[in-house]
Length: 117
Image (cartoon, rainbow, N blue to C red):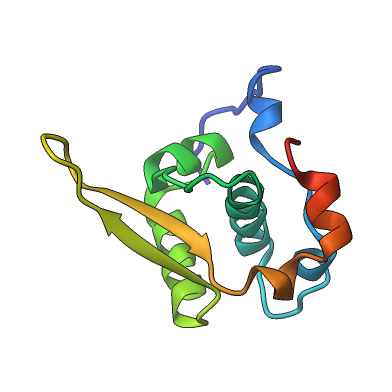
């Protein structure tokens, strides 16, 4: 973790979503991976693509960018998430992440409850 003192503003508290039962109860995920999964799932349930970069997430969690990158890579190696590069005309390419088998991690009841959280 970074050494400087971390303080959250009211706006930042809304950045993190609740953990679904499948994510929370998983013994194969570390706590950090559970937070990453919750963040991705919350965006994915709203029909959006998760474009948050490692630097931004590292700042939000007061961790190093490398720690976040390593955990994204571990989730990819476990075939839990995948990342894709999106090329757009006249813009820089962007990478987004998505949970591969959303039904494994989110029940239909949770999906309805967490939409538009």
